Length: 197
Image (tube, rainbow, N blue to C red; front, side, top):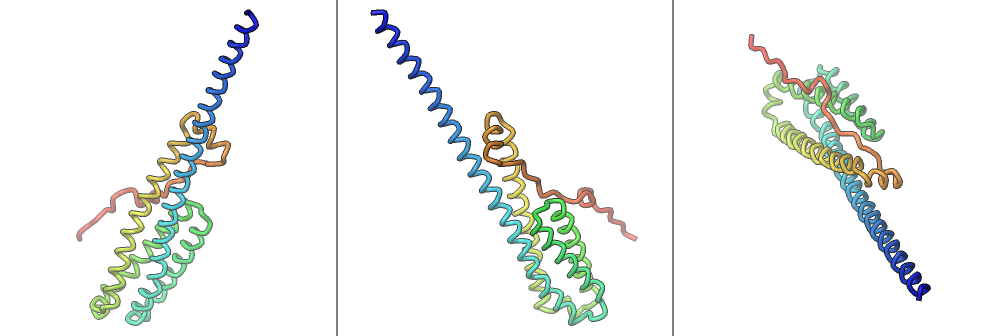
C-alpha cells in the first residue's frame, strides 16, 4: 500500500513539473512571437521612412533642373543640394540614425535655400512645373514627418517590450536589441528667432 501511495505522489509531482514546463514553454513562445511581430513592425516603419526619403531624393533633381533654367548663376546652391542629397543617401544606406538625422537636417537647409531662390525670379514662382514640384516636395515632407512618427512609435514599443522581465531575457537570447529613435537635430529643437526690421 505504501508503494502505491509513493507512486501516486510521483505521478502528481511529474504532472506538476510537466504543467510548469508547458506554461513556461507557452510563455516563451508567446513572448518570442510578440517580439518577432514588433521587430517586423519596426523594420516596416523604417522602410516607410526610407521610402519617403527616396521619394524626396527623386523629386530634387527635377526641382533643381527647373530652377537651373531660371537661375543659371546660382551654382553654389545647386552644388550644396547635390552634396546634401548624396550625404543623406549614404547615411540611409549606413543605417546610422545620428548620421541620417544630421544629413536630413542638411538636406532640409539646402532645399530651403533652393526654394528661396524663387523669390528672386518671378517667372520661376509662376512656372507650373516649379509650383507642382514644390507641392510634391511639401507633400513628401509631410509624409516623411508621418513616417518618422510611425517609426518612433514602433521603436518605443519594441524598446519598452525588451526592457520588461522576462521578455528581456528572451530578447537577449534571440538577438533583438534596443533601437535608436529618429530624433531632430539639437539646432532644430528650439523655436526659430524671428525678427522684423
